Image (tube, rainbow, N blue to C red):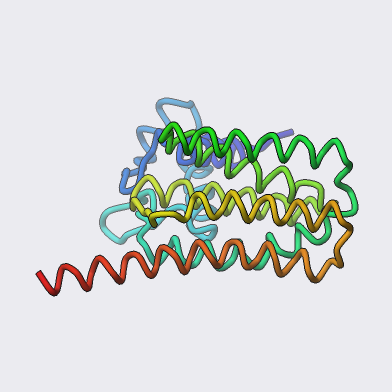
Length: 221
């Protein structure tokens, strides 16, 4: 049976992740209690759990607020994804069938179409799906869940801190194809792991370089 604390946790987590409670939103226990008929103690337990997971800040004399993510948060998440997705892709490769790879190539083509249509929202959604489809086959439920949570965190960062690097999206699609070529060819696990890790690091470096160039241009102006 699901406890009240678990119910409260799931309500808050889902609302944070779907954007109902955006960055900086104050979470008022009394109001939540009235809305869901759950007493204050389970809400406090759930907020402490969300704080430990990095979704909420509990501020003295203010209360609990949804965490506001910055560029540093995005960089830390990307570094972590580079490491854990590399491992997951290496573990997943033997479980991906020819049909799976064909489906992933078709998904990558949809990514290319969304880029051509300048549909940023669709590109982000499809890109996340591509990564999670591969990593979900790693036969490690805990690792898959960790990757899913970090991608959700990445989506929240994007909502609160827009980032962009010219040309990176197109390069990313090409790197997806290269990764699928390695998996299809039965490349060694360490080669697949390195390719996935390099793919994520390339995004991190491209955006860091773009931001540095913009900052330098502002100083010159």
